[in-house]
Length: 216
Image (tube, rainbow, N blue to C red; front, side, top):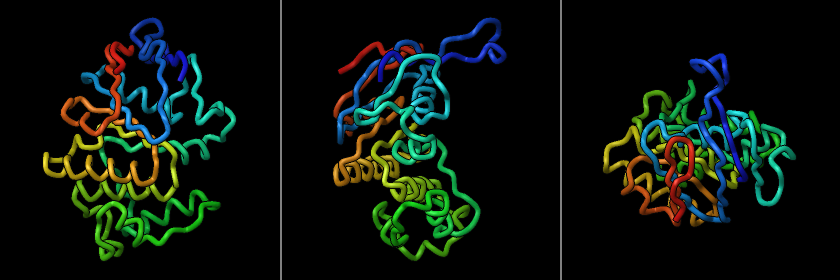
């Protein structure tokens, strides 16, 4: 990522255009877990949404394994770079319906046994017939991760993935993410305001007022 900048559009700002991110530069290595830490409002979610191409930056560029992101269609790019939001979303229907939606959206993807996808995120296969909207928050977070894995991503963008979980479930999800990224060789960015959760990161960035103030 080189000199990424994002501004609040003038029509949404109080007066003139307001800069949300300014001159963000960093590299994410293959198989690396990068911790992104900062207080609420520091720009963590904005940065991840920009990296997922849900927000178009004012300036800068992103290279995905040596290729400019403009070389990819938005759909293909978002399959390779998957964002998991703070609040996990369960789509209407069963758990199996939720997993099948991925293959309906990306028809060129090779189909994967839904039971295998659940086992990858430590959910029992018998949940396939359950109404996804009745799952616990922790189960929904794992289901969202299973949907992401079905797309065979190269990068996971994890926006406070444990914010809605109690400490026990948070530890389990963090350990699960570590194991999956290690096993599959996935790169990931973990945004969090809880410094203890950075234990799973190989390196961390400190974001403050839309700028990187520490890189270690």
